[in-house]
Image 1 (cartoon, helix red, strand yellow):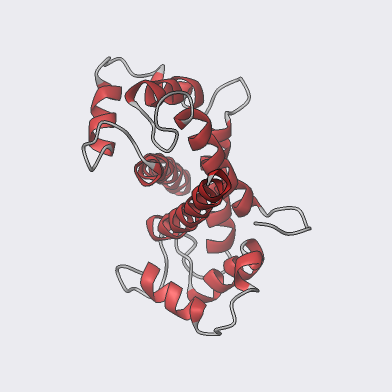
Image 2: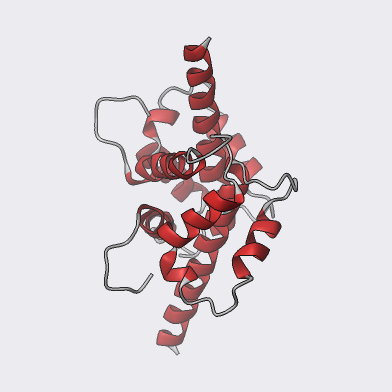
Length: 104
Length: 104
């Protein structure tokens, strides 16, 4: 990332993912992992457009359990990226479906 | 993503990942997949800081083969996200090591 010219969109994106993770993971305890509380703060702040439409109060609990693949009660950076990747794929699929329907 | 207030950093990042993928995947053939040529264009444009430091000319070929998990000669969005995730984890680990060394 260290170079004189301005970063590309992909580089900015990678930097953002690391910065956001560290911002929320650094709020309490182990600053390399998102605790349950940090995960909820992240979801309700960064992805409020998603969480506020959830009628089921248990959805974030179940997401945390599913993402926490090593079951240590926290999310490391890899587990956090799986969440971002999953959301990106859902948005991308939804975009593809909407453009498909526009065509037919 | 559709809301009146400005997007959060995480939402912008997810939008960027989709936009960048579609920009390069749309250059030729199947616009939902990165062909080998599109992958090389993406790497040499968006991640030039990484590729220009590679002495080995075969590194991009091997990356493409490794990322192409279903071996169809192209990268779909999931396979593309594995690349971004891998790079983000490498950058994050390198950051953690550098802060660790600063502490000792």
